[in-house]
Length: 281
Image (cartoon, rainbow, N blue to C red):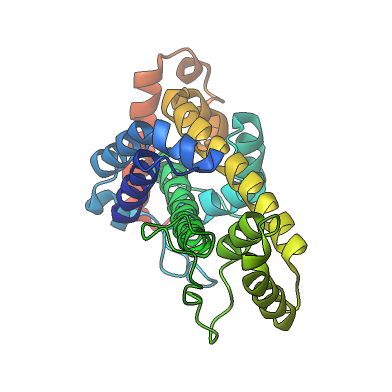
């Protein structure tokens, strides 16, 4: 949440400065209220006591975290954060052919999907801010070199990128786009940029292409995340739970159970859940 709020504020500052922002940044800025609502819902709907009851993974990169979180993580990773209820149904059914899920895990799935998607959004937001900072650094250098800075002087400014670290791609792309059609005063910096990138095994045109591709991918991912978070909030999870619950399907063998309303059927399933806790089965 702290990273996302910081990113939102950084994007807002960039807009106030009339700096250009990427489509992904614009999506995050315009839909941040949805992100805040999701975080509030997660806190309200996933108390720590319930979280601790969920079966945990005993191996792999997510060891110690709830098994259902791992399922949400895998599903989200394979769909680029796109929520598809039909695909999710098939995904969970296939998983349970190997290992049945508890009722609590199935009910926790929508919250876990939200957590994973908020985490994905955090990673994207951090990259967005990094890109904003990189372009701003390049713009300041280019402005000073071209005599557009606060001083109005065209004296050659200090090269702002440490030689001990790889050149930020957003900075390199922005700098190249600003200087490639400039007058002769920019030629030394353009040459230095080209030589620096050559040492890193690339060249300016390739960096620009990769940066454009990254921005396009980020835009798609942020759109998917915001749209999916909306869909998860409005989806009818009661029907999904019954569709994938093996306990529900076993109880449906009794015609009387099938004719009950949802609340009554859910009480039966919770009774089974309570019995299972003390039975070891």
